[in-house]
Length: 60
Image 1 (cartoon, helix red, strand yellow):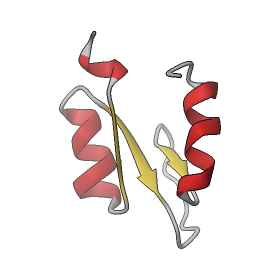
Image 2 (spheres, one colour):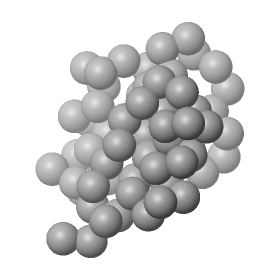
Image 3 (cartoon, rainbow, N blue to C red):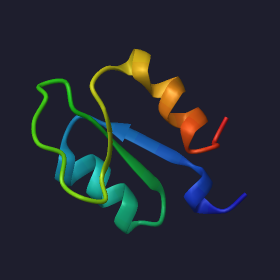
Image 4 (tube, rainbow, N blue to C red):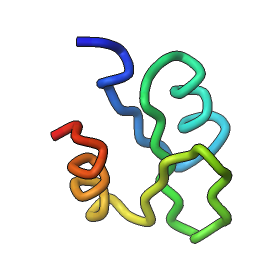
């Protein structure tokens, strides 16, 4: 399984989502506060939205 098939979900944009992406994983930002999502960043507003995103990305 390629590293890009693994996801890392975290609530800190730079430390979690961007760092995971830089490491070759698929970083997903848990954006609970509804902040502006930078281009190229995948984000969910809460964990209940995660399965839908993973289906959309064809990871489940």
